[in-house]
Image 1: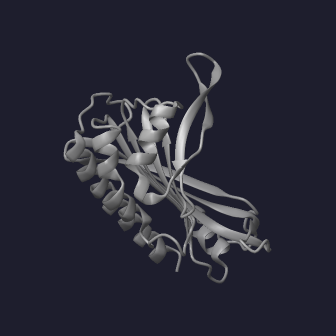
Image 2: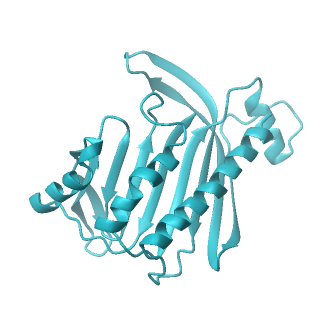
Image 3: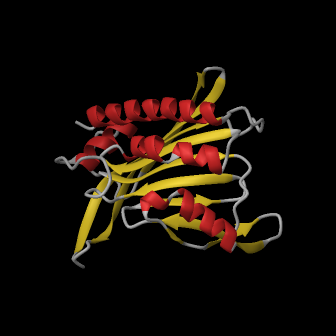
Length: 228
């Protein structure tokens, strides 16, 4: 079950909380029935909170405009978004972003956060597999994070995977509270953060996002096999 899927495009963004920019954003994405959602963000340069702008709809889509990046997020809305919400974002939103908001980028990230399927003794199996622990006393909370690097068309890639035991309460739409105890996976595929050159043009942004999306899907497929 997906919790959140996200695409982040880094680069110069000229969007602020002004009537002009709010109207422009709502016009660009009018087919998605977006509404404005101002938010506050800490500015490390000034040491103060600054007003920023986001737009969202009731289907779980949201776009956050920061000073140096745009976050496109698909939250958990299983009945209202396609199963592969990342592909939906790429096909329907990215072209609007690159033509109207951010046409050059120095860095791109594709992120997916989701629960592994429930299976018998899933916590013991994952904990033993990751840590090679053979006794049955699995830690109540655990987290495993690793990162490796790769090359994509001359661009250095970071491939980050994080697996953790997550427990809590889930409030359903009808108000019912359900306790959950699951294994959560987070996959973050992103280009090198140290390269500040605006090396991706509009076409390059879209092409690279599709490539990162394919890498992420392969990692998710491997996880679905690993936990059996």
